[in-house]
Image (tube, rainbow, N blue to C red; front, side, top):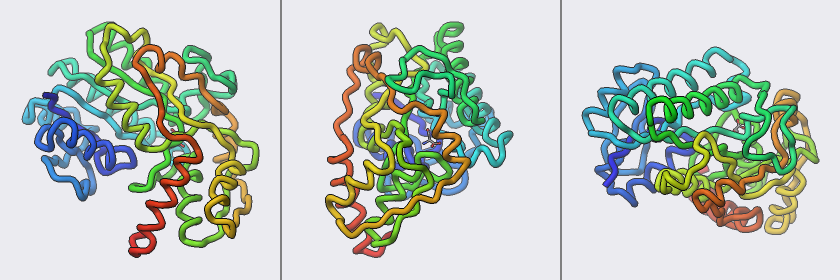
Length: 317
Ligand code: SER
């Protein structure tokens, strides 16, 4: 049985990954790490600490005899542009602390990378697994540096580091906050509340996306994969769907025909999105560890609208 630490447990991914890990591995074997506010609604051990403090990370790992770390600390792309040093510090210091502690205490380590790890010189359609990575955002720069550093710790010290390049993740539990792909979450909230949606990206801006249940499966399945089958480690392209604002709007209109959307382009988000892939080739993840997403735009839309409408009726959103 694994002993797991989730860093960033109350965040967008952590708030759904932590309960799922507890279902699989037992609630007492999954420690919910947090910094400012705890994860609510999931029973099990929790620890407040600053993941930018190397000693604090080591103490928690020692105390709970942790053997697997999910390091989810990050400042998303658009938010990090407002304070690049903060974006770099959070991304890199937490990762370096996790890598060192993983080396010392023999832990496996999962750290997400992102479509943000690509840049304008990257081929944008069917973006290959191994290709040019010259991102132009501080978020992307931390992700590429993180991929390289994680592979370095694997090759140099044998630390079992693994990662996926997540696309925009769509979920109905915790809002992302500060990402370029956030519009694809916010649009569903506006739709169920009967509000007009103001879209920050222009029509024709295609980006890879994924529904949270698939994002959670990707992390857990990769960490469970047989290491002898992995030719890559940091990091695997994974995707479920690719759409532009007009496609997600049409998918919602099928359920809510009165829903209105207008474009009011945010130049920062547009400039970031323009440098990211339209759609990635994730065949290496499929071949090396059996990656298969379950949701497409239609099934995700149906589920998002159902869950969020119930929440709205209860006055929760
Ligand atoms: N969702 C992230 C962002 O938009 C990309 O990984 O910043």
